Amino acid sequence: MSAATAGRPDLPILSRSLGLSRPDAPVRHVHLGLGNFFRAHQAVYTEHAPDADAWGIAAFTGRSRDLAEQMAAQDGLYTLLTQGPDGDRYDVVGSVSEALAGTDHESWLARLGSADTGLLSLTVTEAAYCRRDGGGLDHDDPRVTSDVESLRREHGPPPATVPGRVVAGLEQRRRTDAGPLTVVPCDNLAGNGPAVARVVTELAERVDSRLAAWVSESVSFVTTVVDRITPRATEAAAGSVQEHLGVRDLCPVVTEPFTEWVLSGAFPAGRPRWDQAGALFVDDVTAFEQRKLWLLNGGHSLLAYAGSIRGHTTVFEAIADGTCRDWLEQWWDEASAHLLLPDDEVAAYRHALVERFANPAIRHPLAQIAADGSQKLPVRVLPVLALERAQGRVPLGATRTLAAWVLHLRGMGAPVTDAQREDLVACADGTMQEAVRRALGFLDPMLCSDEVVTAAVLAQAEELARS
Image (tube, rainbow, N blue to C red; front, side, top):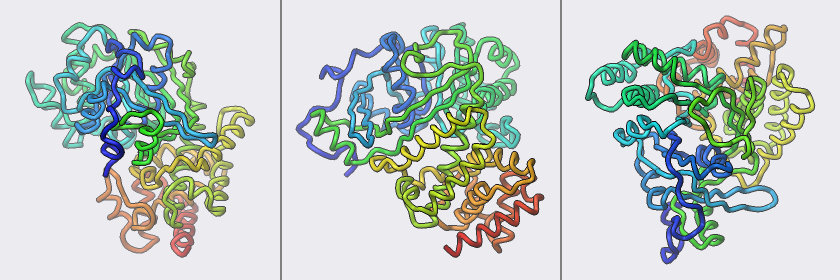
């Protein structure tokens, strides 16, 4: 039985007619990636903005229809179950005015081609942007090639990639003369605003140079840092909502009390007053981005690979393991030495992370975090490794994370889920020494030429394999 069908069928399904939320707002914001994180983060900031009644969201799934249909049956509503050490909180969120399947290309074009729409935000994972090494668009990806051909045709099939879907929407906006737009990527990419601007502009240039020029003039790409741990909801969560609210929620969201959103950039078509809902607007997000990517995300990656090798399945279990906790602190010491924020702010963030990771109510699966390591490690771990090596040090916290990742590719710990799984598993075949050298070279060709790093990763991989 799933969370969507569990519990008492006699209870009403969550809907706006029950008076648990305000009426839906007119759509001015389009979002791609209707999943748990978006619903625990960006949608909640809009919900609490004082002008939320003017900024309804049309949220599209990646491809699946299931979640869109569940939310549509609930008038776009869902329950946010915030679980903390002091108890649970239940909030009905009503900022999603339309929940739509990603396959509904006509609605996608209609919404982005409307002058009423001022924002496009995305939560689609790092791998979905089709970037090559170095950050540009991967023009050799057959999906990208197919999208270029489709977009060049007046009535071509819908694009398959995220950059393709964005470009299709922007081209529709240009055709309808709908005015400027702000794109707000909310994925864990370093410099996600410029990164997404690059792939979108490069794809637009391949399609039509006039479109690329319009994008440069009319589209603002905002850089963001997002932070909130949001595991998958369980049947128990759905049952808890039924018990406390007296309704059936087909798609509740579980999250932690902590939340942070830092943004930098221009909003030429306006935005909700997110600043009055707790978001922070700054001139440069770099210091916050590094803190979050290295400490939270880098720490998560370490626990996902090394912790699962030690038999743990969740972050809560892993941080309760004294050995994993020591490894985590070692990694944090290395990363903290290069952060740009004041020491007291870094110390406070580390303290908060320990509490967040050790929250017994949040069961964050290590297997979920371990996915797409080839995309995540270059921004979560390799920058610190490079900074440490530039100062002549061998950062054992960083090399241990890489060693655990190599063992993960060799079948230890969490299963391998990666867009490049086949190539990665092949890299990790053979002797341990061969696996380490090839896997490091896959992440960064310069790594496998550093004999000191290679030796450290090999020694730690052999040690972990025996543990």
